[in-house]
Length: 254
Image (cartoon, rainbow, N blue to C red; front, side):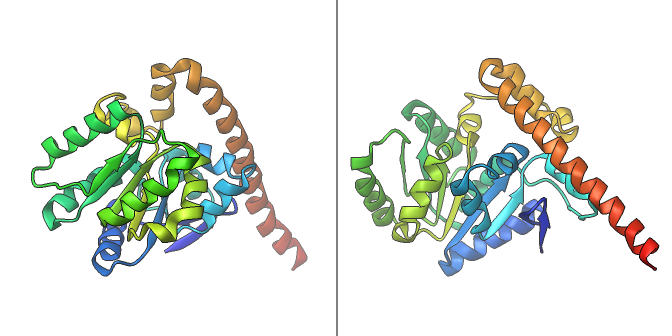
């Protein structure tokens, strides 16, 4: 079921329900675009037209981030659970190994890409990749990259490219790729490769995964989270106050 949160569409699905939709897309060869929404993306899409359009036009918008889960619940939206991008990617890779779907990795550095691919093959025996390509290609190489993916005929495509490069690539070439299920995975390949570790489960459940990222990469991450978290808190506070005021006005009007 789809809802609206702070002007942004979100799908109220569990991890397994989301995986079922992805499998259905692969079985039916039905073009389906998945986006994982977190606080940073929700804030940034307000000032980035390409990112906003990417989210608005996606077929599935998962809630990736406890900040979104808690914020939606504060506003009365019944979110069943968090569906993180890395958890969904790993679940789908497991399903691919079982149902003989063939994934394709696009993005990251060549070293991370190779390590992530080897880690996936080791973790899920029977997994067969349709192909892979690092994310460091020029404008002149894009047509060849698209041809390689289309000719490989993957069942799902996991894209680890930064915003807005990923959004621009998909907007221009998504239909040409011919891939049923497409999902942006951010830094998930770095996690799978062991290049970046996830926060302890207790910190994830407490909504402090962002703090763990700051601890790992303080120079790159502290300002990003400080800025976006502050803006998000303001947006949520205004929405909460507006929700509180509306019933009072309705009572006074009667």
